[in-house]
Image: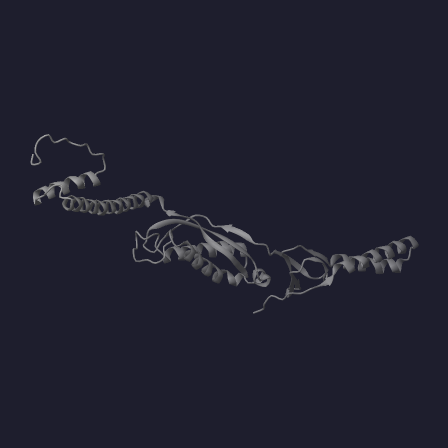
Amino acid sequence: MKVEKIVTPFNGYLVIFLLIATAGLLAYAISDQQIILIIACIPIFIILAKGLIIVSPNSSKVLLLFGKYKGSIKHNGMFWINPLYTRFSYSLRARNFESEKIKVNDKMGNPILISVILVWRVKDTFKVAFEVDNYTTFIKIQTDSAVRKLAGSFPYDHFEDETATITLSTNFDDVNISLEKELAERLDIAGIEVIESRIGYLAYAPEIAHSMLRRQQASAVVAARHKIVEGAVGMVESALKLLADKKIIEFDDDRKAAMVSNLMVVLCGDSETKPVINTGTLNQ
């Protein structure tokens, strides 16, 4: 398999001086009606002019001679090449590609919507020109394929797989590294360098988004309740110990149970508690 060959053609500015000299000589021949000189100058002028090319910064030219690859020009400036060369231009600038939002299944089988942002540029002009038919279409299809593989490799979050070390919604750096590696391997055949790739959009599919939101809210409520109860038990324990140490009041088991019940209701209740004034004895 052939590889990219960088060539540096003849300096084009020197050819400009030759063009000017040829044009002057042609004008003299016309004015002096020297047919032979005119016939000699015209093809020379055409050959010199046709071989001039300009390569802009971060651009390249791929050169073919009757279907045979002769090399690539990546230097910027004005050059002169064989006028019989066929030339193809390719930009070497970095470009963005944002994939469409596609519906795929994560590792647990849940439908999700995902898209990626890819920053890429042409690295090997030979592969871009001859290894693939249309490199922009190739990039789009391979990116979609890599996204589907990525989504199927990890769960969306820890609610679905509590033992997962990497999830799509939390471990962005690890997921992006995995995506970048996958895309780099797929696009290398087309001579494309992956500069950066990251997830641009991630969400549950509409048909399960509401259910998943309710599940997350329920999990958050349970976690909050657990924390509240844990704190309330500590407060009740401290209150009973403080009352006992200061000998403010003596509690039997029934009174302790009643006090614990009341304190837990006050500390763990959702609504504001309303005090009740007891005008009788403590046993009432």
